[in-house]
Structures are given as C-alpha cells and as structure tokens.
Image (cartoon, rainbow, N blue to C red; front, side, top):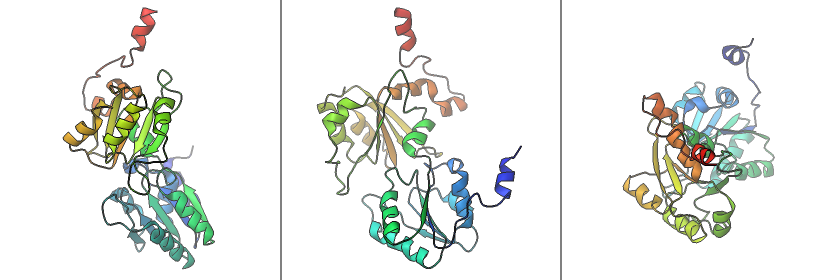
Length: 285
C-alpha cells in the first residue's frame, strides 16, 4: 500500500514545465487544506506570485532560490491592477520560468483566475488549473455549517458582495435571489452587508432568518458571529469583525448548534441535538 510519504518521495505528481503557469488554489487558510498537487507545484516553481489571503506558512514549501512575489489585492488599500498582475505572469512565462500563481481558496471562485487564464491564452502561454478548497465551503465547514442539508436545501447560491466598481453588485437580481434559494453564501460582503440584507428582506426574505459571519475561516483566530438577517450588519460592526469573511444566510446556520466540532474538540458541550426541529416534527406527525 502506498503511503503519503511514498507519494511525495516518488517525484512530481505532474511536471511544471518551463514557460507554463499553474493557476493554483491555496485553500481558505489552514495550510493543511492545501492539495498535494498544489504543494507539488510549490516545490517545482521558479516563481511564485501569491495573493493577500495566502497563509505565509504555505510559502515555506517553496525551494531556496525561488522568486516569491506578492500581488495581493485588498479592498480599500493600494493594490496592483489586475492587468499588471496578468502581464507579470506572462513576462515570467515568456522568460522560460516555471510559474505558480497562488490564490487563496479556489482560483475560479471569485478569485479572478478566469481573467488571468484568458490573458494567458491570448498571450499564447500554456497553463494549468489546480483547484483549491474554497472558503464558502471549507470555511463554513470549519464553523460547523454545511452548505447543503437535505432537511433544509437542495441548492445553494454563491454571491460576491461587490462588483468591479466596489459597490453592491447591480447585476444581481436581488428579489429573485431572495426568493429562489434557501441558502446564500456571500464572499466579500461585509462592507455592503446592510444594503444587501435590506435588499434581501425587501425581496421577501425573513428578517429573522439565521445568518453566520465567519472571519479568518480555518485559521487559529477564526471568529464566528451567529445573528439574523436584520441584525447582521449592526452586530458585525459592533463585534469588530472585519474581512476576510464569509456570510451565510439560511437555516443551515442553525446546524452549528450541533456541528461546531471545533468547540466540541475543546470540551464545550453540544448546544442542541436537534437544531432544525426535525425530531420534534417527526414525533408530532
């Protein structure tokens, strides 16, 4: 039987060739959630261009002599332009470097990986996508919140909290979103949470619907605020919760009362064995 050590000792899982770019997901934060293929690429790269949300411990995997270049984009702070980042990747690739573009979460989930891939195609640069664990699933999982549960939802909608202008996304049909999906997972929504919550409530969402705000998901300083849709913006501000954060709207948030496995690992008691009231409903019927 092959062990993990055997896999890692056997050589590259795939070869990162000179002149190629690997668009790679670093996961939501915890270095343990990095994929084997991403770790393999980090060990081969001549150049690593990384984002703001990449845990610094992940960068310890690169080999001595590797060029490690920061290209983080954070809202409201001086950041490199997306076009400049893409041109930098192309420049390195055309110089024959083995380039690994490292992004927090998954590169194709609100990570601008699609934009960079299109730029590479236009420039004739070969690339590969290495998916990562996205915060909207993995981060909520660390908070004890499953994004799907058959007693709650058969669909989930992922949204971004701002568009290219930095405002609440105008292209989103908020009344339709409010009615269409029982669970909403929002990235980068803290800044406009009051506006978004108001639009959802105006579209028919219950003001008392459960909401969780998960900050620094999967990291040791992760914080989770359990609130309601109408109070989410005010309570998030009062708690001093800042980005990066994931906002989850829906009854799946209640499952955290039973599934907060991190709290239970610290010896804290389970808050409810039936957070959805399913057993009570079954007994009543």
